[in-house]
Length: 467
Image (tube, rainbow, N blue to C red):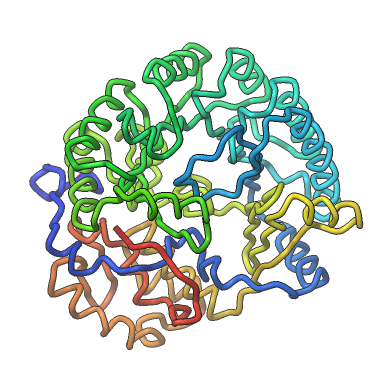
């Protein structure tokens, strides 16, 4: 069987840089469909309660839980995450008390007997929280939910804020996967982005996690940062491969100073690479990772062939959610904490992004939802098409027609016919029965999915470039 990122000859599919240049435009990352830029306030708690009740109908599938732990001691200037900058450790315990209230309110509304098959702690910096507070979070989760014995429990790790006590506490509450934030190993780049991180800390974090028995360890990198070049980023990738990670996320830096004011520092100081230089960085990383045997899962994810992510891609069990690609297909996502997003069959809900607003809603006895979206029937159908392309790299018209209750080939004939240029350039194959993304189209999955997206308009929000 040909690996998902291989040609029929068994070699990793080379990047076609000319095609990437041609098609690289701004577009959604499709961690949801419709994208989060379409979320709106004012929907009303009654409609959200109805959506939650519908999600908990008899026979509902498993649960996936996300906890946003937003605190950081210092701001990395490139960061696009929702963070709270403080050195006051008491903020962690206060936040945990509020999380306990949100968990209790949510548990009252859902079937807590449903198995929890995935948990993720994101941030911010989860390891900002002292080990004893992480232990409290574990007790809260176990006290409210039915955590499956084989639950995939991941946590984001900042090697600069990691102790053996953190590792022991995380292992004690069931964490078995970790992602290490490295971004870049070049000292000049680190100084430019306000994230000084000596190599010994990366090595130490990996060693501690391996010794503790974490089943999978991923590494996060970012290309397109100030003063990076293709040569320096290639060296970063080579150095990170010495850590022997199970997965890598190689993100394209999204320069959105209108959303993240700290990024204006880069505009003032200069050094941001040009789009062509970013493309060369991506190509260098892709070449090294695929040569090292990693499978190109899609977008920014790479995994070893025996990793569960690569297996899910081959077996059709891949899913995209607000943490990127995951193996939790068919699960409902419930998010907790500031800015956390929940996703069920017919709704998206995002919590208040500000700590004070989130806290005030909890004080008032309300779920702290700021904005969201109730999906229409057409939204759900198009979501199935977009996610089929993003996760399975194909659309099987007969199977989708049965699932969605419409003749997909007929209903979306205009969109399918509009793929002429993509097929001509070898990104995909169309037959009367299906659409199949070809290897050279994998780096442009977002571009292909955009052809089925009716939300793209001047008022739909600003997005990062697809590469």
